[in-house]
Length: 139
Image 1 (spheres, rainbow, N blue to C red):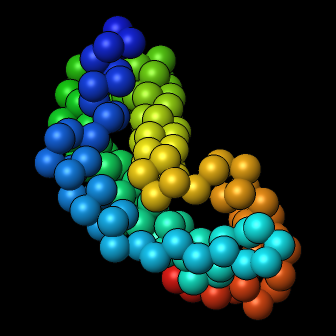
Image 2: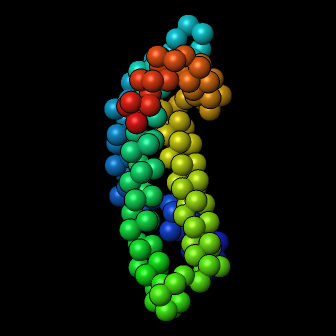
C-alpha cells in the first residue's frame, strides 16, 4: 500500500487541471433566490462542473490503475490476491472522495458561495421531484 503523500498526490488535480477548472468556474453566473438559496440554474452549473471534473479525475486514475490490476493478476498466477485487490478498491473509493472534496470545496470558495448556502440549495432542490429529475438528467 502507498503512503499518505503518494495517495494524496495521485488523487489531487494537477496544475493544468486546476487552471482549466477555475477558468470554467469563472463562467458560472451566481444568482440567489429570495430565500437565500442559489437559483436552480446556478446550482445546476456548479453541480455539472463539479461532476465533470470528478469524473475526469477518477477516470484518469482508473486508467492508471489498470496496470496495477494486471500486475496483481499476474502475481496471483491467474487470480487476484484478495488483500491486494481489496486495498486497490479502497484506494479507488478514497480517491473519489478526495477528488470530490477538492472540487466542490474549491469551486464554492472560488465562486464565493458559502457551503451552507450550497447545502441548503441542494436539500431544497433534491426534495422537489421536477428539479431532482432535471438535476439527474443533467448529470
